Image (spheres, rainbow, N blue to C red):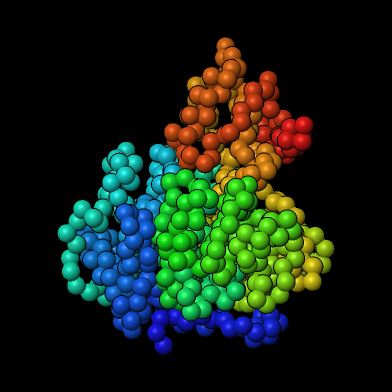
Length: 525
């Protein structure tokens, strides 16, 4: 068998779900899944269509393997060993893919890092993971200069060794990738995933693209490969199945640039985050030649689905999951009609249910949960045993989302936690609050999401100033710049309100529920 063929075939959903069993060998390495096997069987097969530079460059599996092998030698020369954590700070491009593959070949753990991170955000993640080496480019190396203990490796500037690198024989349960996710309290948590995580994504990815792997299929997403949606919903599944992946990260999203990329790359399958779809709809954009469009993160609604049919000529398939356990539910127009407001049905191999406060499955509203055994489920939160334990209730991983399952379709009701969903990003308010508290004018602060028609939510900060400080538009702008310079460009508060006092509990904690109600009322005013 050449590479990894699709796990599913078109059949009635009930038969697919009932008959599905995970086939995961005890020894498994994702580098072999996405590169080694294909490079041996069909070295001239196109793996990545790289549009990230000038023009277009086809990168074959053979070329990708040579890049990854050379980089693996370079990492080992810098002291990287099995189990070490190595950052990948690169945008979409062949070297980004090769970096993850090289790290896995060593048996080390890759850490996707986002170019929009600022100093504090980078420092917290790299420091928490204990990474000593980061694969990056010139831009990323400049960002890492404030971390003298971290070595920046730029493949383009290296004379990397030529010759094969034997892929480590890792176990399916051995750690492979550490992806940070934002929460409501404390600093971002690292979800540690094993080599089986890619296999766990494949059924959902295939279904969300109406059985990905058809002749002529070609994948692209505007989402950065630093996020689980770009890395494991698009890049790695495409490489594993043998579907070419287009690399073309846009500096700023635009409908016109989307159309150009789709045409130039002969893209047939796209993952559009909901905010991208809203921007395309606002521009009344039209995209031709697509076979499938997938989206995930929040329900799209009937109006968006109707527009999608007119704009793309296909039915948008919605999928559901989170960094800790992804691609567990999806729509699949090839199998069943979508239900507006639904996030799809449980993907074969994943047991998704709604449970009550005692962990019992309920037919009414409750918390959406996934039973242990899902191959895309994380091993643990890195270095956080208490938070890991709190993520589970018996055999169920808790998503923190409220929902109802009606006729097998998962309907999202709302979030139990305070994570802000803005333009497809999950943003933890605690990290922004901590940053604002470092400003000399700020006494206390509460950060919540305010409903927004375009971005789902925007970050809003309610600030109490120190004595002697006077509220002003200039100060609000200075606080926004303070966050922009230290965290990520997308996470700064787009609105700041100055209050005399915040609603607090008797133990001194900000009552975000009251602030969220206030923000929601402002949005309706």
